[in-house]
Image 1 (spheres, rainbow, N blue to C red):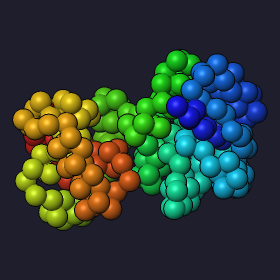
Image 2 (image 1 turned 90 degrees about the vertical axis):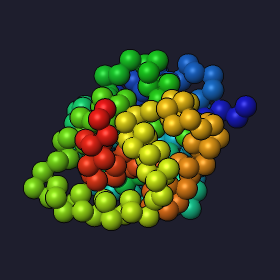
Image 3 (image 1 turned 180 degrees about the vertical axis):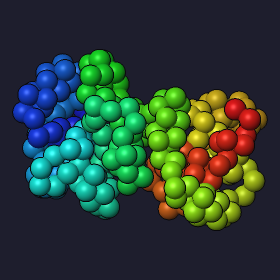
Image 4 (image 1 turned 60 degrees about the horizontal axis):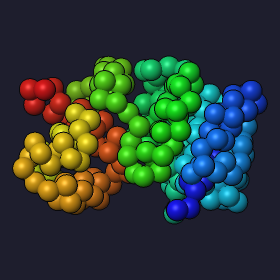
Length: 223
């Protein structure tokens, strides 16, 4: 197997050194570069073609949010995992909406950071259901009604089965759990998820969860 190519992006050299030390011992992960801000990260992504970028949010010059939006717009976009010191931060939420595959706290144990890199490289989001709910509650505010109307209009493009799968994804269920709950095969669940992403123009399961929450579906499903 090819190693997972990882780029570290943080304006604090001590943080980068700590991450490199924590992750460097993993045989299946290769650190291909380090960047001190978003602009440098864009340059290094073009040169090193990483699979995953660990991205700090608060940086001088080009911040992590802007860099995430730009990287995810690339033709062969790397997966982005946001690094943060906060569980529920508005900028983290914006990064997730921009296409980040999840986030890890900077004080996360080393083994969990390594696991997060592996999971994102394999196409799985890095958000526990509890953290997802916390972030989405944090997003609620004065624009909630307008956001709900927009979200429900977008979800109207889904058929009933796809809507059920979207709600299950929003609850943080893995494919196997969705398959068991909705009495379908894991392969069928994956097909539905792919169709949902394509129909709604979304990048990943995290964005499905956010949209389902915005539409009020997670509050109404009884879980």
